[in-house]
Image 1: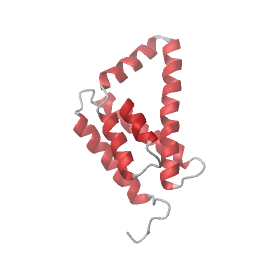
Image 2: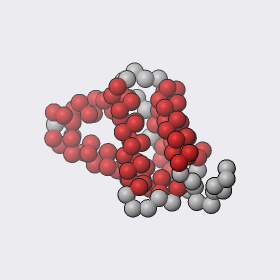
Image 3: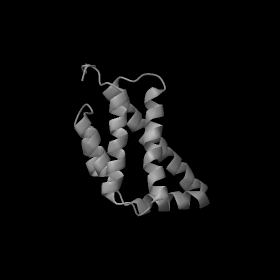
Length: 126
């Protein structure tokens, strides 16, 4: 977790910071994530905490997307939700996924985002 926080504290998000964040997230023990969600299905107090955690994670990602691509309104939160859905969906579909495979999926998603969005000040010709 400290790795993730360090990436976010280093300043404005760059492509390298996004990649470092993705790599750090891919090294999370997904069994813990799945276990928390299973526990939340049975315990409303855990479900409430998990909902807050999910919202906070998405808020951080929305802020990063907004800062990086200059997104306004609901665009950054929508992109953050899709990114988070990729993370959760992948580990739910394949709880034993290797970190390298999770990172590859995340990098493909990142490439798609970059293909459709430009960073402020980026030259549209390339």
